[in-house]
Each structure stands twice: as structure tokens, then as C-alpha cells.
Image (cartoon, rainbow, N blue to C red; front, top):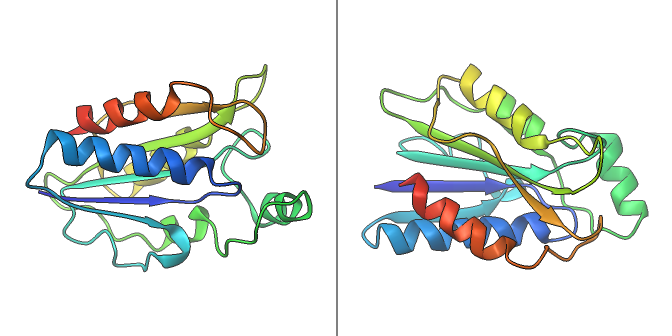
Length: 163
């Protein structure tokens, strides 16, 4: 089995969740080849041949990040991370027969916070990837983090359940 996890992160929280998901996949399938990489390092063909593609990003302004929201995050102290998931997902090759995918995000638990995972899942489905699970959201205490207690453990369990 080949699993690929691609993520965008502003403050590092989404990267922590992605690493926990990768660990869950490895724990559930020790024979799996698992790649976990930031979107800035993922080429258009990174997902080719993957049996499972997991894509995640931070929730910015109630949805997926935009160039503007990444610029605002950088002004607020987040390191500049390069291109976002939107452009990467536009170039994503269509999934093949049996190609499964899942979407996740990090978000604050607040009224009207929104969810980037829903937009990611929609884009994955448009590229003919079968969704292996409902989009998942992992909570942060504040915009810059940290992850809420127990969220990394929950992410690892979610990753294991995907396989």
C-alpha cells in the first residue's frame, strides 16, 4: 500500500496533525509506504499511484487558505510557506480505480469558524478520488496553536482507521 499525505500549514499545527495521521497509517499498516510532505514540496504528480491520498490544511476565514489569508498570517507572525493547497489541488491528477482520499483541517472551536476540510474534500471528489472518510477537523487552542490536548492522538487514530 502507498499512502501520500500532503498538507499546508501556517503555524505548524496542521503539520503536526499530518505527522500524527502518517504515524497512524504506519501503525495500522506497517508494510505501507507512507510519504508525508508539505504542499510546497509536493509536485503535481506526487499523488500518482497512491492507494490513499490524505490532504489537509488550516482553516482561514471559514475555509481553505487563500493568497490573502496566507499573507495576513505571515504578517501576524507565521513563517511564509509558499503556495497553498488550492493551486496544488487544481493540478492534481484524477484518481484511478480504487484511488481513495481523505480531507482534514485544523480549526478553532468557535461559532462560524468554518472548515477547510469540506473544500478540500469537494476538490478531491472533483478529481475522481473516492472519499474514504468524512472530512475531519482537528482543534487548535488559538490561531497560532497549540493543538488542543488529545488532538494528535485523535489524528493518529483517524489515520489508522483510513486503512
